[in-house]
Amino acid sequence: MKTLTSRITSKGQATIPVEIRRKLKVAAGDRIAFRVFEDHVEIAPATSIDLQFAQMLEPTLASEWLTEEDEAAYGNL
Image 1 (cartoon, rainbow, N blue to C red):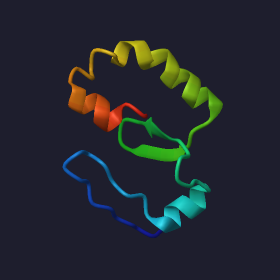
Image 2 (tube, rainbow, N blue to C red; image 1 turned 90 degrees about the vertical axis):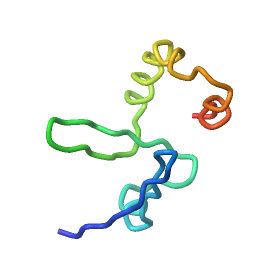
Image 3 (cartoon, rainbow, N blue to C red; image 1 turned 120 degrees about the horizontal axis):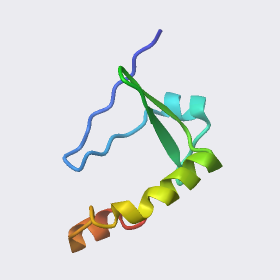
């Protein structure tokens, strides 16, 4: 097993190491899914089902982005 690390920025962002991006076959602009379990989280390329689920939740997230700064930072997600 190999362990790779990345630093989290003050905005909660992290760079996915190139070796992991290659293994997942993802590139700039691709979407990824975080699958959350009790004791760990998995990262995988997002499938259409992942995207449909996220779109279903989108209306409930509208109240989370309350400021213009949030919209500017995350509006393209």
